[in-house]
Image 1 (tube, one colour):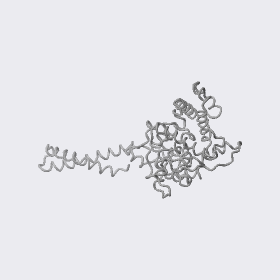
Image 2 (cartoon, rainbow over the protein chains, first blue to last red):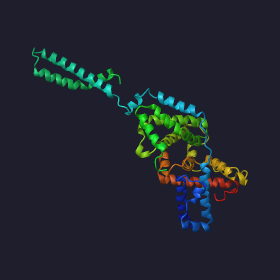
Image 3 (cartoon, rainbow over the protein chains, first blue to last red):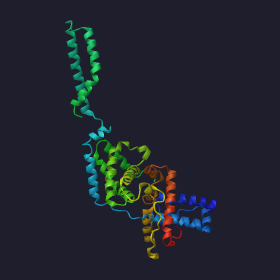
Image 4 (cartoon, each protein chain N blue to C red):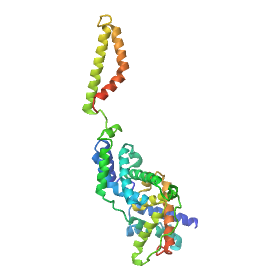
Length: 167
Length: 199
């Protein structure tokens, strides 16, 4: 096979790709014009002519290859959807994947309220306890200790309130 | 096939809606693509009931991994679904106890016996050719068969096939070239060409 034949076959392949990409067939496919150089070569090269006709024949045959009907296709759709719906219960699964924010809208507000009230309660309790030590409610040391304790316990409080509020 | 079709656009919308929590939107993807996925799987595993089970498995995997669908990478949902289905089929073929090893299935020369020759009547030439092609395809190595089917039966672009098969476009071109060569040989050896002299 000559270098020319290889080059012509490359050109024929690109033409063939054009046919496939534009979903042309039959006469439409034939209407796609070959470059003059290809035509000239094909007129005297049996090998390349065969190659080209084989390509066209493959394309035509492949597009009419039998396709199988899905057995009980409606049942299959239903069965897939049933599995999808059953997947890890309602939408918590997608939420867990990050698709849906867990604390959206009203739930988020409720969660924040819980966090704030629990924190305030803890802060007040600790300050009150601290102030009883020297019987002065304005004891600055008690306030500071309460604040530090609150900051240290913040992650625990957050975790606890998350458990209490339904997602 | 580079531009997005209406189906492609609705697929992307269905993905978005499903991720937003509307699982019923996923049904649109199932209805639109189950036939394609089933047919591709049936070509790979040959048993229809297995292909049916794998189709269900593929869609479930797609749902579970929906967030990982990268619109920029895939452009359309179809090649992504085909990739998932293909991987399911390959997993199945790896597991199945068969007289033919997985390496043999994937190898370049699993079978070489020609297809039996049959009637060469001019009237049925085309039908026979399609039938022979169908038979020859079943003898092709899996990757060649898959590339050929996606390209010429379902008219996937090279890019889409690459995404579906996790290969680059050049490899896809090579696979297709070799697939055609192999088919040509398989069909030719049957009846000294039967009007398929060009092959």
